[in-house]
Image 1 (tube, rainbow, N blue to C red):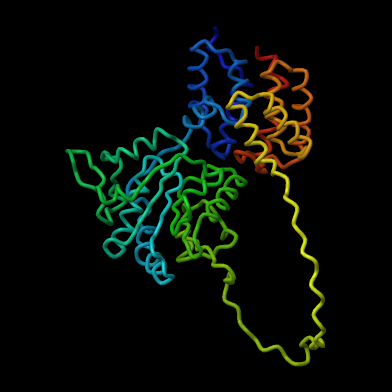
Image 2 (cartoon, rainbow, N blue to C red; image 1 turned 30 degrees about the vertical axis):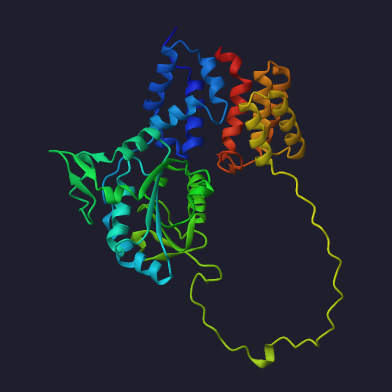
Length: 408
């Protein structure tokens, strides 16, 4: 078995990583991907095996590749101006709005230093016993395991980021442990910034997503910011990295100085900027219409139950596949493709299911259709599905499948 990597296999790996992480092409470390692919080849797997696994949006190999290229640089109270603004401006504003508890989210928390820093900031800025909760999420489970251990070395403490609030206690010459009071209010979970945060996590008053979107494509960055803003409470604050956006996100207003990169979610009905009320001259007012009798009440109509959405049908098919019911899954996917012929994830899922059942002659036309329809969309346009992935992912999946015979 040769240790050489087929360039097409490496290209496919790069496409998968870009789709999962949203990273720009130049932000994906080729060396990290090569290490993963060579390790798989050393285990005896063929290039065709690897390509087949990378055709599916969610696979063990895809996750391993994504973890290999993620950047985990972080430390306590990084960008201290954000924590000072939260303590001095954000918390008092939330209390004036009548908040009964404050919740924060460290999105892309890496090994947890940012999440614990936010928790310490909120606790120190509130009356004793005021309810606080902070959630830290990251794509890389190994980083989250480090965060849950709550023990850190000197690398997590930098002179450039002062210890603003009580956060940890020294437990060794170069080791510190997060204070129990901070640790109790901080939890961690795996999540992708390109997918909606599950509803069980609720909404937040403060979101830190800093120095993560720098690596994203413009389309992925915009999609992530939209998803982040949807999880804010009205009046909540989103903090981004210094050079990650060049305009105010939709539905938000800037808070503080421009370099702070802090944005507040507008409350329902709140204008983006103060408006000047002026009296409308009598000469231009619309004439008052004569009052007409109210029309007779229309008969009550019972609304028809809408059909399941493509994503709901897709999830139903995935559940059946997990249960081993491939016949039922095929029937659901066939109905899905008929109902929503432009739903790219359904075309890909049905094609792969038919391939696994040995019906390649039925999978090939589906892959050709998938490629044609994906080509009609802008490459970076995110396509709704169980995972939000760009159109180029589906086009590349179809191309890789239709050409995979040359990799055997």
